[in-house]
Image (tube, rainbow over all chains, first blue to last red; front, side, top):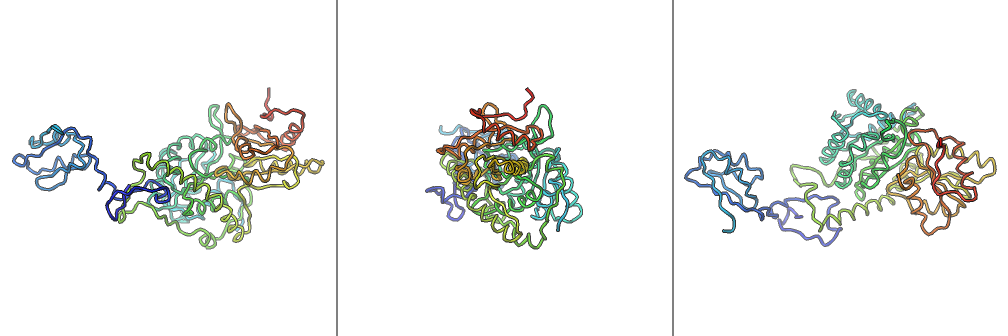
Length: 98
Length: 382
């Protein structure tokens, strides 16, 4: 639960602070959702043609369409779809926490 | 303007007067003519609304949820199996605090396949968080539909309302209905302007993952909204009576003041009960009738204050919670906790079986018997 204004998580003191229904604003900018990633995709610039197939396939979306594309590891779950789909083998996986 | 309308048309014209922006409904007997006339009203341009044709009742309520989330005032109607199919979204509507108004034509659930009156369908949705009203006549259907929007949309309530009417006894029976001029409706019911809605300029996510840190409080707030409704509903009724001259309550009592034998009921049986009360009074029996309009929130305090001075109280249910008793009987007993008045439950009229004045008189006879059982079936062919 967050407020858009200050981008800080807010801890509700009680029901009186809360909206009537589950309605949040900008919560994803502070709630990082990649803690369970076990495999980290790495984009290798020398092989990347910036075709943006990885950007199109990323279900999160945790890949941004820069050139070459960049991965936001705050949200990447390590599903490996980008690795599978890259036609140039420009994305490889690395075990997390090694 | 007075018109002769069926209960279904009264519901449809109530929604039309409320100037709903979106109608999504799937036809089911005996609700079908509500959808038919509304599609005609929209097609004729008499109502500036989006009429969404859907493939099921589940989709009908889902479409209303989407539209209402985006700030539209929406309407749908269903019955029996259709209401059952909506069940998941009935919970969703209330927990999302979307003040949708839905008409339910009370019809029995199959098998055996039945299209006739029975309140099992709506009572089965008791714990979803919706407010529920039961109507006795077509004027009440029209007026209740209008008031339901005003009550549901109140900022301190924000809960959907299910407006119930009995299959055929009201849905397909014509009565005189006094319809209110549109400018007077507009003054009574302003445009829907929710504080929380889907808005691309002010994006929010709705209904997202909610941890135990917050779910509990959301539930608490829903219950508080129901409690607030018990205060606000009578205020809206008072405003309606002042503007349009017709009085409503969360309950309606008929000759209850000095009544020794009180019969509690809802829907069309209430009208018959009032006639039966007159007959019994003529015979010297001090009978009275209490019609329950609001099943949720349940007006416990009001029910208790009206019933506590009776000698015996009977509750007539056109439904049965199998393995226990009629639901209105259960609620009435709970409301009477601590009082000493004996209460008896009557099951009557399931699946559209007629409940006659004689049947109702027989209930008082049975209550007067020496040792009546707590749950009495009326008219079972044993």
